Length: 270
Ligand code: IPE
Ligand code: IPE
Ligand code: MG
Image (cartoon, rainbow, N blue to C red):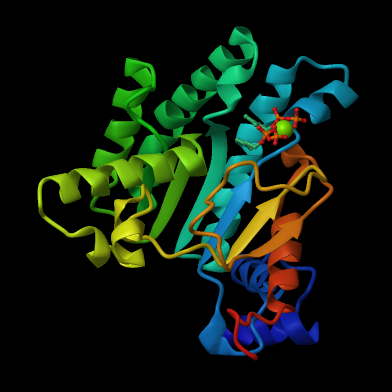
């Protein structure tokens, strides 16, 4: 394998012969690397935006864009594995997306169902743990059952975590967290002055998950749209012009490369 990587890098050897090991090594060799190996990226969160405009530009219905969006999400899951990320979070339906016409909402629900039905076995096999963040209580029962099944069937997996933000809003998540803590205060379990940031973090849907290192938003929009308001306090943001259905491995690697070019200071002096 080491010879394969060296061969790929120096360009010598039998380039014309098919060699899957060499191809794999070659593919790996373009992966961005951190300047400091101790600061390897772990968690990427993506605001998958631009499906509607992608479809419009092609004279297609919006649902066609959402369908291509699912294909792009699959590619992102693959690339996250290749990059060795521990966590990938995909924003796929916000608490505000209910404001869209009923037909569009229905097709988004349907696509989520189809995605879990078709990909769950693969995720079980590939050691991916699936978690859904967002308000599950107010989801249609069939979707709620399905997402709970996905979480249950992958609960024992410890390879990577795929978090799907579905019926998710950062403000709604904070509201539910505050309500949970207020209940504990009312029950006398904790005193108001004892509440720490850790209590809040643990009351969020992302409890136990690391904060995102990098948030990517596609489609040229430069806003947060209620995504991970608490968790992304010190995330780096990369905004890409590509519409989500056009997001592939190259775009993902480009965003990670940009991330590695940044200096994170966390309010200190670097
Ligand atoms: C992202 O694409 C998918 C969801 C928000 C559900 P959009 O549907 O927002 O596409 P644009 O922004 O209208 O192009
Ligand atoms: C953000 O995209 C939500 C998701 C990607 C699921 P939107 O398209 O809903 O955001 P706005 O309305 O442009 O802010
Ligand atoms: Mg949008």
